[in-house]
Image 1 (cartoon, rainbow, N blue to C red):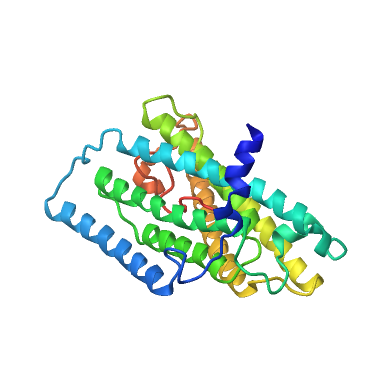
Image 2 (image 1 turned 180 degrees about the vertical axis):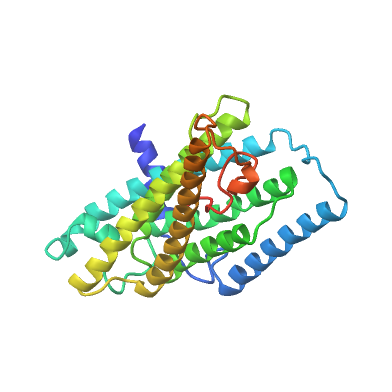
Length: 303
């Protein structure tokens, strides 16, 4: 069973022979990237305006669609995690002789050698991860239909995440292996939890999704520091320009989440001081939460 799984996830000719190029890889051109992002933003705004013009107050009944979407995303995420994990082990096993004296496997995971081209097993799963970002966009439409909520940050954040995944492939960016491993693992847990609650089962007694997002951002922060150190200590890492853009994005999101946590903590302390028995008396709208109790400004990885 393990041998069959390893073949289909790492040794299949399509995976081993993958090459990212504009003529063969679907969605690999800059024009496609820009067009898809503009289409996503336009459709989201149009859908929100239509519901606003018709003054629909009740959520649009979606039935099992949100739960099905969460299940599909959970399965895709765990497949990506296992696939890139097996592929990374295979790549290290086959190429370690080439860089054994200059770096360790962990250093290779964070810092690709200069001149690395986007081909082979690891970049195949990076490409699958990039394509999966478009499936994440459906959650925006589901959110609009359920509670007519659309924020600038959601549109901006989802668009940037697609762009970032594109840059990983376009410039063979270092750090992407660790980012995809951590992100896909957290996604599989988060979307599995959303499926669990979506079919009516009991939710956690603490902000589960928020804590997963905080864990993911903490991991990404550590990985970014590691890339920066290796870049100056080991003679440079591939795709450092794309990495810099990635760092700015993650830093901004981390700031927004920490700001939310501080405000929530202050409200809780004030509520405790007012004798409310430790319960926060603010509404989900004031806290920036959506209908499922998730932070609106947190990215969907989100990672």
